[in-house]
Length: 209
Image 1 (cartoon, rainbow, N blue to C red):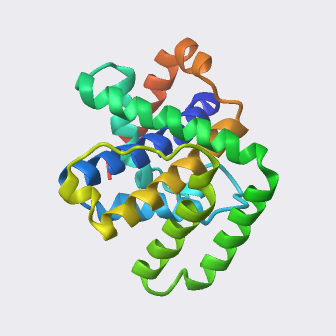
Image 2: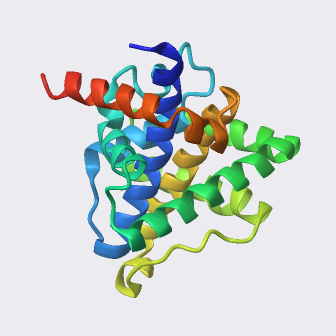
Image 3: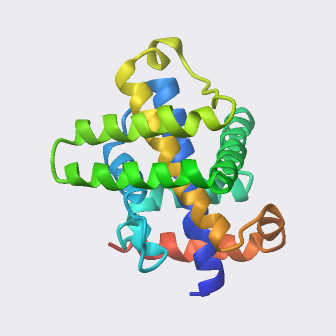
């Protein structure tokens, strides 16, 4: 394992997993429970002991993100779907950057997240509602609204809207991690083949279990 590329792969997979699940919900209404809650968990880790601890100390929690990321890097993904995913990713990175510069809003978000942790072991639907509210009331107003493409029947569903908002918040958490390790587009371009190799090793190990 090459730690440098391993640490680059994790937050990228976290971002990709969030936007893929958003796309899945918006177009099919499919709720991938395991990976949704894995992504949602990352929001609550404000003081991680390690990069992996943000994802519950288990690479399998972002396995879906690693698989989709590998397809993207290898250009083995439908063009239209890829364009939408990349658009969401770019928007998330820009929004997270704005939030990082807005110290007041950032502190409010952190405070709200800490207050939500009180309900961590209680009703999951309540957690979803509270995290969704943090995004819609504090983060969303910082920039033009993130436009989600999908089928109207799903986009108008209140429960799906809340889950999408939670996933946006989870995506922002991974974007913050990506920024903290000095991640940028040039590094993805220059180190693409090494990141691909690291992801392939990770996925190979995960498939053994």
